[in-house]
Length: 247
Ligand code: SF4
Ligand code: SF4
Image (tube, rainbow, N blue to C red; front, side, top):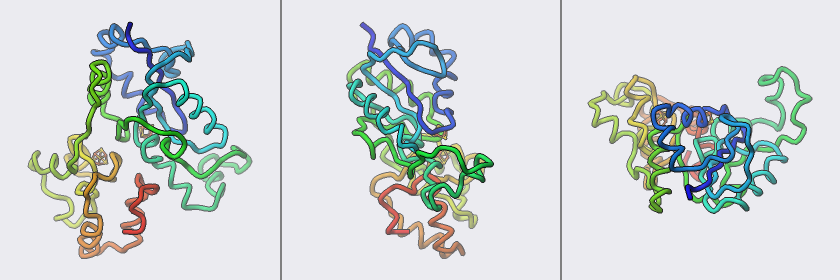
């Protein structure tokens, strides 16, 4: 019997679900091997008998907490899908402002979402078995994860930084050019797509283990960035990570 899979979404732009749907060439083979029972962006059925749950999005409302707990109770394997779920994503930026003060800027009014709470990662609410990082996720990495789960192999992630991929492409280092870039402390796996197109890495795949954040901060300060500017760059995606005391 193919494993039953549910894909769920909380506070997010839903771009990670879209990446799954972008697997147009692979979906026909995939649906022979897995049984998708719940995937709001793709189908109407809302099956609750899944063994594997992918959760996209972070928790930003009180009402979402119980929903995440219900999914955890039903799923044997729970996977955080994308940066919102894994790190809290850009939704964490609201945590650095007085509660609700951002509502008029985002929605044009302040009387919405009375149950809004500071943004939480999924792992702050329930145990998470695996993380599929990125904003958005890499659709080939999603396929690799599903294939691993089908074979009962725990899918791994690169344990080296984006810089390795960036240098292997022969890119000129953005930091050397005086720009800020978090690629030296961010988990690889995206093919260094941002620096390859001359944009800085904002750390969407999370901080890779063993990173020397202090050293990167010192280099960026030598290039003329203030402590506050560097802290704000890290907050774009990693505002809830246990690195804040280093910034
Ligand atoms: S991680 Fe990025 S692409 Fe995925 S849902 Fe969040 S904001 Fe959208
Ligand atoms: S280069 Fe950095 S910000 Fe860009 S996709 Fe890769 S990890 Fe994310």
